[in-house]
Each structure stands twice: as structure tokens, then as C-alpha cells.
Image (cartoon, rainbow, N blue to C red; front, side):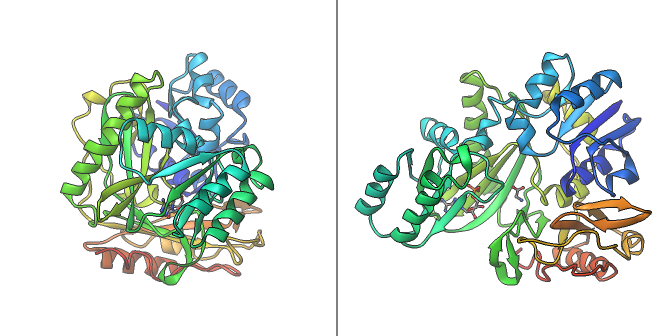
Length: 423
Ligand code: AMP
Ligand code: GLY
């Protein structure tokens, strides 16, 4: 089988690495990929959102399965276009990707299907939103732009004034363009967050082992929000009983409602869930593997991923006999460029990668890297996802940081407390 992976981050390197281990797979291409995906496949100079060229490549090279990493091409309809051309692709159609592409769509679906989530209201005009905020109790509120905003469209607000400022930024200043033509204002939930990922084929739901990520930039979960500074799997805060409730009250009714509404969901359904004292509640859906959650999750997966994703893409997930997991926990530490999540300098050579990668039970996944003049350089904010297995979370953490300590580049840094929240 020939596989095409679309994207260029740590998630995509983990996908290429895992897929290339399958006995079913002859070759993995990655568009556009990074310096890590080159180790297990061939990079293509095609952007992740260049649907026309991606389709042409898949047709001309008889690609058997395409796997989409990031959300933007999914929301833009890459799956619909591939299917129109008779190509097999893993991911949701544009209609189903609205679960990530429109928070208004998702909140309305959750309400209709009585799926537990924060109470909310939707506005497209500032005066009505302002009145709603003024008339409600002074309490923390979360204000969200409706559409995709690269993780920057969510504001957790302690006061009415902050909430109004967030609405102004989104609706009036249009800081997120059309993604901000509507806002969701919702109740602020308290609790621990978990990332629930499941492979879905429209009907059948196969949950993956639960992960948690660290979104804040600095130690002790302080500082600005980021794409994720590290993750670990499993997350034992989600007990089997809680997982059962999440499947029953969140995943099953979501997949069922999408099917009944004529936009069956296939791909990765990723529920960001808040574990509140009143039970698990949905914060958001994503329609793809989490990054960096994919790295520790895929490091633990023993089942042939190519077989799983092919079955999901062709509606045959029911034939799968469960998933097989390495019982050992995995921890992924993200190494970032100086300045991230703000501006950062690119082009510094990275040293020690081979030495780190050679350590037992360690895999260094690349994210923002490129091979230039024979050396690996940083090209992004999140540069590497240094991932390790261990007999306990503590041992996996130790192994991951032992590898981190072999790697250096000008300004490269990471949090030192990834997985400390794990129980
Ligand atoms: P979202 O993109 O909707 O997941 O929001 C990004 C992050 O904002 C989440 O991972 C949470 O940390 C936080 N967040 C979103 N919605 C809420 C909420 N209703 N209550 C508390 N925190 C929230
Ligand atoms: N780690 C959060 C995300 O992938 O959206």
C-alpha cells in the first residue's frame, strides 16, 4: 500500500513513523513534511492546503490511502474532493468537519442531542452580546470566535469588562476575519481537561487511550496558551467508569446525531472534555489527531495503524478486533524556539538529535524542522516532540528528559514539568 500523509508537524511525523512500520505499507509520502518525516518516507514540496496538487499527486501515483493531519484542509473540503475523484482518504467531509470548524454548529448539536456541555448563547451583533453580559451575573465567562482561529479565538474572562472586550475583538474589530462573524458566550467550567480521541467510520467508534496535554507555555501551567507544550498517555484521571460515561453520553450521541443529520462523521473525533464535579462535559471537538497528544498515543499503539485507518476510511471499522496497547505510559516533551508562542528566529542548527534518538524507548518526533545544507534546523515555534516510554509515568518522564538533555540549539527550550499533573 502507498500512503500519503498531509501536514508538517509532530503529529504528522508520528503518523509517518507509525504507518511506515506496517507490513501492509510499501511507501509513505508526506506533504510537505519536515526533517523527521524524511527518515521514514519521502517529502513532497506540496502545501497541506493545495488540494488540487495533492489530488493530482494521489491519482498519478496510485496512492491507496491519504491521511490528513491538520484541520484547515479538512474544513476546506479536501476529503470531499478526494472522494469525488475516487480516492480513499481518512478524515471527515467538510460537512462533518464543522464539528471543529464552527463552534456555533457544535454547540447547537450538543444542545439538540442533550450532550453535556457549558451553557451558552450565540451572538452576531455587539449590542445584544453586551446586553447579555450586563444582564447576567458577574461570573467568569468564556468568549469564543465561531470559526477556526489557530487556537487563538478563545478568551477565558474573569469579569464582565473582559468578556465585553473579547466580544469587541471578535465581532467589531474582526481580529479573526470571518471566523469572528459570530461569537459563543459560555459558562466557564472548572476541572481537569482530558483529550478523548476516537477513530470513527461513520458508525463504529474505536476510542484510543486517553491523553492529557499541557497548553500553557511555562512550568506549573502558567503563561500564555500554546498549541501544546507536552502530553502524556494514559491519563488515569479518566477512570474506566468516567470513560464509559464519556462514550455513552458524548461520543455515541455525537456520532449518531451526525449520521441522522446526513453528515456522518469519519476520521478522528477528538473531544476536549472538562471533568467537572457534575461529570464530564464537552469543551470543544477537534476532527483530527491532537498535537502533541498523537505522539505519546501512537508511541503506545501496537496495532497496525495503516489497517485501522484504511478500515475507518472505507466504513469497515466494525471488522477490527480491538486495539492492542503497550502497557507502558508515554510522555512527550515539546522543545520550542526562543520566543515561542510569540515571534522566534528560525534557521539555527540543532545538535544531538541522533544521540537522543538512539536512547532506548525514546523517539524524537520532529515538528518545526527542515533539512538545510545537510543540517537539521528549526523552522517553527514547536520544534521537536521528544517522546519516551517507561514502566511508570515518572520513568517515562525521566527517559524523555534524558533525551531532551542531549539536544541543543541556540534558544531551544522546554517546560521541565511535563506529566507532573498525572496522578
Ligand atoms: P476550545 O478551543 O473551545 O477547546 O478552547 C480552548 C481552551 O479554552 C480549552 O482547552 C480550555 O482550556 C479553555 N476553555 C474552553 N471552553 C471553556 C469553558 N467553557 N470553561 C473553561 N475553560 C474553557
Ligand atoms: N493539543 C491540542 C490540539 O491538538 O488541539
